Length: 50
Image 1: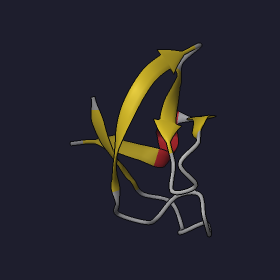
Image 2 (image 1 turned 45 degrees about the vertical axis):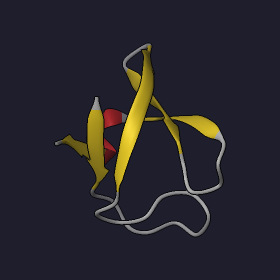
Image 3 (image 1 turned 60 degrees about the horizontal axis):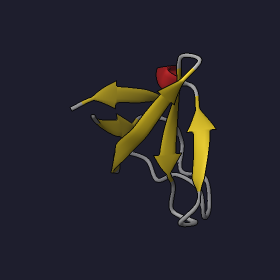
Image 4 (image 1 turned 135 degrees about the vertical axis):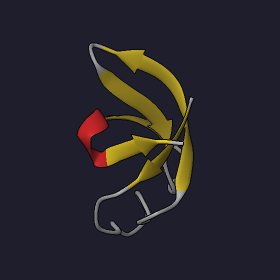
């Protein structure tokens, strides 16, 4: 699934309006490879599906 980050830009983590691939869903959260190149879990309310 592809999502767009709708929160504020966080240096080296997530960029506002940038699209990311959801690698997996775990306990309702999205595992995303962020701008640091590492995969972390993020709550889905910070994204919209594209």
